[in-house]
Length: 445
Figure 1 (cartoon, rainbow, N blue to C red):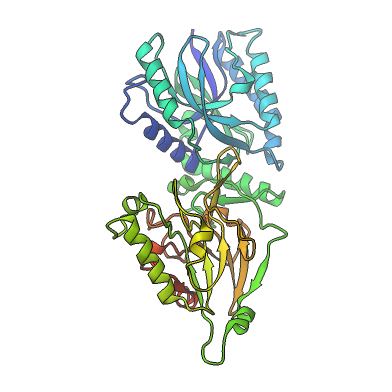
Figure 2: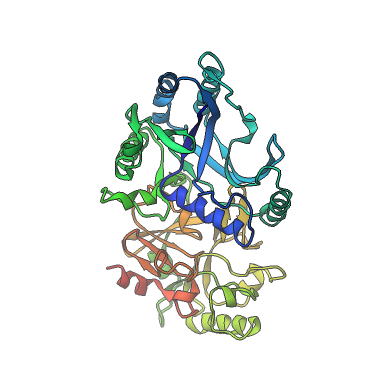
C-alpha cells in the first residue's frame, strides 16, 4: 500500500538558511542515509496508508481549506526556534530545529489526523504535540554508529542559536512515496498538480498576495537581507522570502545633532560628528576572523586607541555602534571609554537568540548616553542607529547606521548600501579609525 505524508515545505530564504545549517552540523560526519536528498520541511501528518487516493485528497482538501482563512489574520505566522534533540519511537536519535506553530495549524493537524485514522484511511502515525520540528539529522534504523555520532554533534551544537524566522503557511504538500503528488495553495484555495507546484514563480506571486493582505492587517515584514523589493522579477526573487520584525519603538529617543554640535563647538573650532563600530578591543580571534593587519592583540589595541584619539578631539561627537571589547577576559567598555576622546554616544552591541533571549555583547555600567538604539537628526537627514542591521525596523524609511557584520559579508553589508539605505561602519571598512558623518553623507548623495 502506498505511503502519504502532509508537509509544509520551506521555500525562499528559510529554505536556504536551514540547508546551510544542515550542511554545517553534518560536516565531517557520515550519518543518515547516503541516498537522502535533504529538503527542509515540517511534517504535519503522516505517514498515512490510504486505500483510496482520490478520497484521501478530497478529505484532506476539505480540512485544509477550512483553515486557510486563518493565515490572513495577524499573529498566525509559523515560527522557528532553537535546535532540539529527541529520540524517535523506534530508537533513532535526531537533531532538529524546533517549530512553534500557531493555534490554527495545531487544530488543523489534529483534524487531519482524526480523518486519516478512520474510514478509508488508516495507520496515520501521530507525533507528540510538543515535538513540532524540522529535522536536520536522523539516524538510520538500527544504526548505533549514527546514534552515537548524532549525540556527539548535539553536544557541540546544543548551545548554538539558529536565527529565529517567522513565515507564512502558504502551502501544504501531499507526498506520495517521497514524491510530490499534490500541493494545496492556501492563498487561492486551489489544489495544484506536481508540475504546477514546482513553479516557483507562481508560488512567489501567491506569497506576495498574502503578504500584502497581512501587511494591510498590521503584520510587519522585511526581507532576510533587509532589502525591500517592489516587483517580482523572476523565480530567483523568491529566494529572499521575508520573516517578521518589530516596528519602530514608540518610546525611542531622538537626538538633534545640529544643536549638539553648536553646544560643543568653541570659538576656535567647530565640533565634528564621527561614526565607528566593532573595535573589539582585547579580542585576539578577531584578527584571524576578519583578517586584521595586526601581529597580536596588544598591537591591535594600541593602534585602535591611537587612531581614535588622533582622529577625535575633545569636543567632537562620536556615534559608537557597539562591540567596544569582546571575548573571554576582555576588559569592560567602561575601561576603554576612559581612554578614548570625544563625547561618545554608545549604542550597545547586542543581538537576539532564537529563543528571544537577548545576547548582550558590551559590558558597560555607564548610564549617560547609552542606548540600544536611537534616532539622530543631522543636516535635515534622519538616521536610525542600532548595532545589528537586522534590528532596523521594517517601517524605517530613512538611512540606518549599523555595525555587527565587520567585513565578513562585504557584498551584503558594505560601508554604503544605497539599495537598502544602510551603512556598515565597522572599523574594517574605515581604515580602523572613526569616519566623519559628513563624509558618509557625501557618499550617499
